[in-house]
Image 1: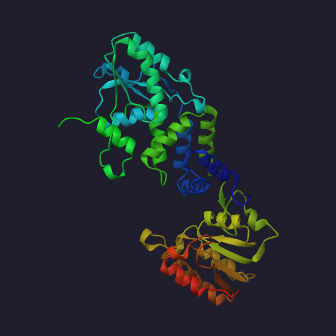
Image 2: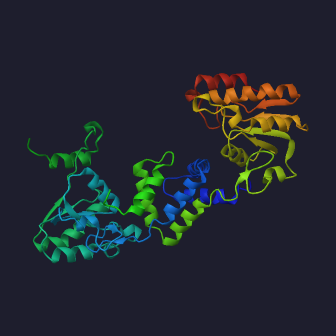
Image 3: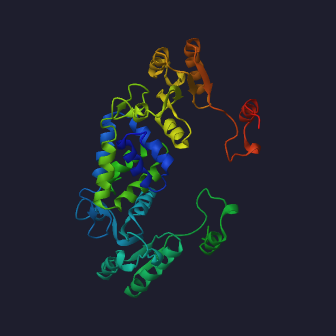
Length: 199
Length: 199
């Protein structure tokens, strides 16, 4: 590609490495940035470069934080007796945005996926079990994705937590709000029926 | 969003400013980067920050370059008597990839779009006319998108170039290769018929 300057070529290359961004999109994004003032481009780049600066895992819930303990675990208004287990911080963000849950979290940073070489030891499961063993936990809510790996991970976790005399629940599966019965797959419908509630 | 560190939040914000990237995608891209080694993240950021460094317009064709004159205009194997007019460098890249055109280019850096406040003076049309007036040009190929604005820009350019005794052509409109007659719109079919060629 001798017909475009190296700097531009390199940015296109970097963008194409991102998931869901093909070579055409990478070109479009790069040329979009090129039309922006120097200041915004610098700002974008430097912000990204600093992404991980000072970021670590919360000592309690393993969420990403810049302090020893994340803001959720620090918050005295949160119910520390309820732990919601999520796969990654994005799921935590999604739940927080729903503005319903008032307990604390435990971020696994992945799910058990033998095919991809992710076993229980790669996740924060040992820390979770330790946390529950310490006591003071009334309920553990499993909020993993309803996939094969999610189910397997849930089963693995339950095996260790069940004996600890803690209530274990999982978030409901069913028809999403705004969804259409007609287009729901049979597994979802089965779960929706199983999980039916009285009016 | 007190539940995620500021650095991360800022990167999500920067990504969401890009065209075609919504808040959910911005989150996903950011967390994808977070899982990468520090080195790759820094590299990504710094590459983007340097995007415009040393980039300027080619003195002849206005393509982006790091030298006074771009590599295409410098290339003695290119036919300097034929100029292909394109809207932006992305179109130039697309044409170069087709590996068919051996002439040189003129990059307008936009098209005439009165609604968006882009008039002929915002583009490099004056430089194009100057270039053709200087002589030595046999053919000008208009390779603008077949939109309303593209047609208007082509008409504007032709008004100035027609009197200069230069052959003016435009790239063919028709059914794209691999396209389906059945799904082509009537304007495209009309153009395809008009532009029919003998076997």
